[in-house]
Image (cartoon, rainbow, N blue to C red):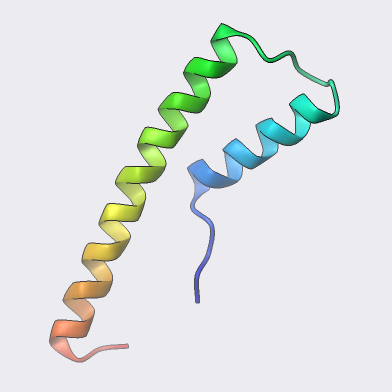
Length: 60
């Protein structure tokens, strides 16, 4: 089952609030989004490693 990571969910929530004009798209938001993107990449690498190790052991 593929689920969205917390950083990805936070990015989506921030994008929604920008679209709704609840928050402004500014440099601070850009920095937050960049850090969330980097964190999400780390989460995805860890998730892939976990799946690989489970497959090697024959777990599902």
